[in-house]
Length: 323
Ligand code: FUB
Image (cartoon, rainbow, N blue to C red):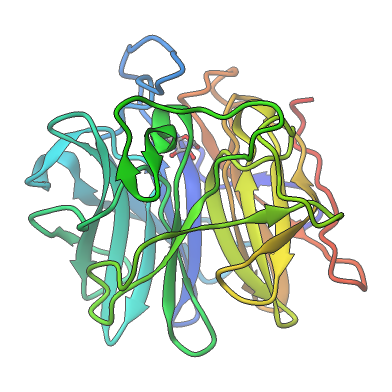
């Protein structure tokens, strides 16, 4: 599949997290909608209030099965507003959906909902994960069965309000030569319902070994994802206001990771967000753009395209069409 294709033609879906469960590919997107809220740097226009799940056994030739609404905001006891990018992990017969949501005080927290099936319905816990903050949880299962969550996002995602896992009195956004704000990584507890340790910064180094600076166009902004390829750990992310998907590699889930390059050049629409999955011997980049909505950045559409590596394990850059 050399040409990207849209996956859901009749609705707006974004931020795909994709996993292989029982030989079938499951897609967990955000469900965009027209709320009428004006666009701003706080992300208020992303006012989503439920999730659907999609699945397929043949991503190249089959249309997706829509399993319908699997979790909605009104069922979450601690809900304020804005269900953003979610992810799902499997352990001991249960499926755990992790989702960011603003609580009743308008602070983003990460919640968990549980199901017996990858296709839902997911039943939310009564409270968010203790010690959680910000957005975009992505859960990675390492080869030894340990689960790690990567999370965090700047501006509307509120990451600039935290330092050393504590809320600051006022937001602190580094710039220029100051160190870039990092994504976070944390090992999940055995019961999958909480953090087993304090979240740690995901350090990205430049090729010369210096830490990434806040003024670099390829610094982390949001949309963390982790995958393994030929024994190496690939941490990928969105650069937000410079509109790239980039990646860095390391030799363990915590990093540090060394910057390697651009996976996807800008798409149409402000946000870019993705997941990378191997299925039936090929690698795929799931992502979104705003072409079908005529460029409305809060009405995004899911896409997939094949992802290729060179012989050294470098990812070949894909063109997003929004440059
Ligand atoms: O969908 C809302 C937000 O937009 C996500 O959480 C970000 O990653 C960006 O895609």
